[in-house]
Length: 407
Image 1 (cartoon, one colour):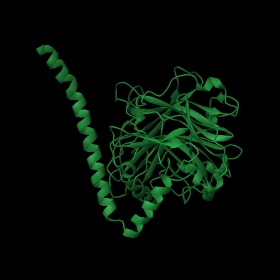
Image 2 (cartoon, helix red, strand yellow):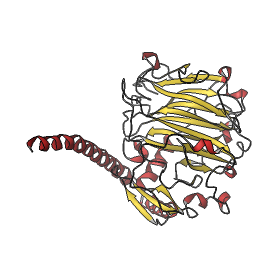
Image 3 (tube, rainbow, N blue to C red):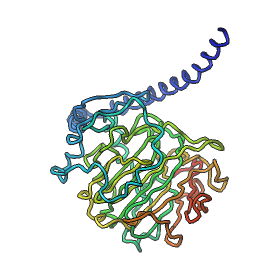
Image 4 (cartoon, rainbow, N blue to C red):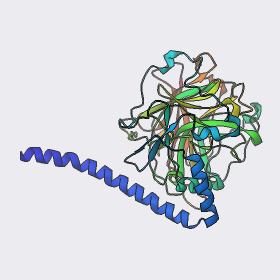
């Protein structure tokens, strides 16, 4: 009996430690949010309350997670996406029309909470809070969301953009016409301060600099937006080079959610361990009438084609890599695993593996001569490629670094 009691106690201790860590993360986020909230005028608060009533539709069911998030089940035809003026009469597509059924076979996401699933006719959407709106406004003002450029972009029709001070990238740019791409990326939890961010994204883009059309998806640690340091599933879109249009996840109308169990903004709770077990996700952005987002074998939703002008016939650039953002008076955060690729690839470096390009019929391997590597701060973050052992024609991309420099 005593031995059994000791076993139960030892099993409880790690769980109690996890719960304590979660509570500390949530309390830290709430304190940060209170400070930001106190700096907002009464007029701005009223405006945000009105905005929240528009964004958060009445749920048919709701769930709360151990991470402090609330997820709502919203009638699929009443979601915030349809507040966009171009989508008033949009008919929901439940899955791509022409992408083969074989693409929905394979691995399912491992991180899904078993108790969260919406009833038929509704979709799962993370509830937006006042703090989310405050942080989103600040993030845009600081220029913490942007697009990685390369000196070769003039040849593709995508003009160079002046990078906002405070951003650094380590990325692979594929500069050829495409209809999307898929990749396998390992998931990390880089340590960031409350006003910093660290991301890994797949970007698909086309258009001139002042009207750049972009859809992007991946993971990130973004305390400014989520009031916590958890790694989350993130997306962004814009049709004017991040100037006025678009947003993260559901913060503006645009992305049409179709999944009942996976929501943008979810915590990715299986994290890679340096020199240990690697946890990865498979992300795809594919054009099939609309621009679809796929996670493992699940189509989560899509950005309607109507939103875009320069991506109606596909895109000219696909980019995969990492991004770090920080105020210029602070040392920058880690990117990826926090280690340079040159220090070792296997179980050590952040990666994008088996990246393939969608040519509107099949997935094809990227042509090596169309791939351009960039690292805007090579003293802080690096980028390298290597052949993939499991897929002979594939090119694996490794990136990241410790940061600790002024951007």
